[in-house]
Amino acid sequence: MAHSVGRPAIAPGRPAMPQDGPVDLKTCMVNMRACGEVRHWQRALGLLFGMQDHALDVIAFSTGISICGKAEQWQQAISLLTCMPCMGLLPNVITCSATIGACERGRQWQQALGLLASMKETHVVPNTIAWNTAISACDKGGKWQHAIHILAVMSQAIVEANPDAITYNSAISACGRDGHWQQVGLLVARMQASELENDVITCNGAISACWNGGWQRAIECLASMRQTDLLPNAISYSAAINACEKCGQWQSALGLLAWMQHAAVLPNVISYAAAISACGKGEQWQQALGLLDVMRRASLTPNLIACNAAV
Image 1 (tube, rainbow, N blue to C red):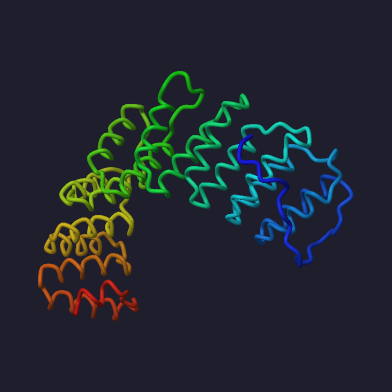
Image 2 (cartoon, rainbow, N blue to C red):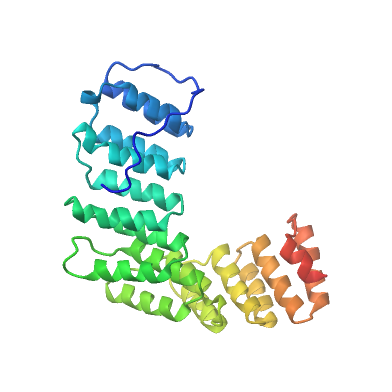
């Protein structure tokens, strides 16, 4: 595999854990997982490399890589992956997917895509998890075009992995971050054409994408949720209110806030802050101050956005 940086470094001063110096792989794995639960990745790697090389297997490395990923130690995860061939172990789809996941958590989209490409070089066929994780990495890295490209590749017959709801939701989120709500609409349509059901995450992603001029579309998406079995949550309403705020639609923002309360969904700080900001932009100072008072009576502490908007 590419990205070889040698054996992972083990930091000194490791915390005490049960069964120091395991004598067999099974005990090693148990103790490694115990370390992983408390994010002691250094200790976990110490246990891993404390074993004789001939006793290690692919599962042990996959466990170590996953532990590093959860601790956001993507460099260490890549190091473990590159160590495997030196020990006579061939990375499989699980180890590669876990390493891509570590890069995704570390917001290293370039590394994630590099690992995805290198899987082909080692004749490891990416599964849906690997593809989805790479798309999620692009989402976190603000690379929506790359996310769309990966989805397109997945949709081709030559790839042995079919896009699922997670695939589309990640791509929708990637497009939504930059406000490409028209592109999100196309993705939702493709998702439905593939006979994949929309869920609350799908709808929330579509609504969130509407901050860049698509406030009417945001309200339509919210209304369509209410007409189905999908119940809008605080994220749904807050995203729609935010879309109205960005477009200077303070009346609609207040209407959505009232709609939210009527649906027995408690507004949160984000909901109120967006509505207050909308009122501020519309020079509706009394409305903004009134909402600040409502927040305090609801034991919600106004954030900086809400306070600045009401001044």
